[in-house]
Each structure stands twice: as structure tokens, then as C-alpha cells.
Length: 249
Ligand code: ADP
Ligand code: MG
Image (cartoon, rainbow, N blue to C red; front, side, top):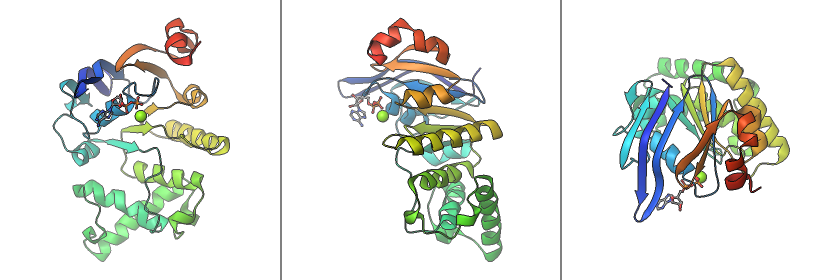
């Protein structure tokens, strides 16, 4: 059994079947990529995993527990974190202040700085944030104004904001979309580093095949809301159905 088990998930938007009988099993401590053309239902599937959408039918189990019917912050507390396409950081805040937010959010789902309860509480939160910033080599940047950092550093900060919640499953929706090659390569290195150093499972949606083949242990190809094939990167590369439906050959 995988750490994530999706069974027979269906999701319609009016007359459109966005997901049709999706089955997906993600093994613990692996990187599982989901690829497929635009409109295939990749983001919809991810939204069903984090509680942003509720499937019409089917089940989503994480570490043996159902995520369905839980609020996004409750799912977050279960150990699922998500990284967005554009880094979701607070540009007006410093790096350190940004790091405190996910720690506070994990308590009750709110993003309120005044949720800090006491000076002692603040000291503990800061210490935890410093530890994580050190792990991602950003400790020297803790007082920087976040908006003024490079795109690569913003992505690194966003990853640190996810990792400080100690997720068991990290979901990434096109983390390198719109990036220049150098930033894409930095992101690949960062994700490899995370994969090697931590007990973490990653589910990544990605268009850039270089990123997919650099990171993935397994690949699921989604087409028109249904998994077409699931296999190792080596087999996916040569799969005739995939070439036809996705790589356009
Ligand atoms: P992908 O991420 O693979 O590009 P999406 O999951 O975003 O695809 O979308 C799958 C299909 O569902 C598309 O046809 C899209 O237009 C449609 N869709 C997605 N979200 C909604 C929504 N909230 N309401 C109506 N249709 C939607
Ligand atoms: Mg999408």
C-alpha cells in the first residue's frame, strides 16, 4: 500500500468530466510525477488531494486515513503540503517573518502574526525557523526583504516554508513553469537535495520533461482525466501510447 491511495476518483464541472475513474498509488519516499497535456485534469487531481475540491465519487487515503471531507488546514496537519507555480511568499515581510507564518498556520489554519502567544513562544518559533533556514542554506538571508530576492531564492524560501511544517507528502504543481534554464536547474538540485536528505514523498506535476526525468521514480500519464499509463521513467520514454498522446510523436 502506498502512502497515498487514490481510488476511482471522479470529478465533474457541469457537463465536463475533469477526472474519470482515477486510480493512483504513490509509494512512500518516492517521487511520483504526473504528466499530461493541458486540461488533462492534473491540477484538479491535486486540488482533490488538498481539500480544495471534493471528488464526486471515490476515495483519497493518506497514510491510512481518508482526507475527504477534511478542511485544507486539517489535511495540512495530516502531513500534506503544497508548493504553487509562483512562489507564495509574502513580499513585504522578511525571510524570517515568512518562515513563522507556516508554523502559525499549522496550529489553526490562520495566517495571523498575533497568534504568537508570548515572548517565549516567539523565541521557540524563531529557533525552529533558524534551524530550517540553516538546513536550506538561507540563514544569512533571514533579515532580507523577501520581494527583493532572486526568483531562485524566493523558490528556496517557499520550499523552506513548506518543509518547516515537516510534511510527509509534498505536492508540487509545475514548480519550474516560466523559469529560465538556470533557475530550473537550481530547482532540480534543490528538490534532489530534499529527496536525498529527508523522509519525504513527492508528487510533482511538471511539463518540463528534463525536470521529470531528473527526479521521478514513477510517472503517471494523465489524458482527458484518466490515467493512460503508469511506469518507470525509462519505460515511459519509449511507450508508444505516450509518444502518441503526449510527446506528439
Ligand atoms: P491541467 O492541470 O491538467 O492542465 P485542470 O485540472 O486545470 O488541467 O483542468 C481539467 C479540466 O477541467 C479543464 O478542461 C478545465 O478547463 C476544467 N476545469 C478546471 N477547473 C475548473 C473549474 N473550477 N470549473 C470548471 N472547469 C474547470
Ligand atoms: Mg494545471
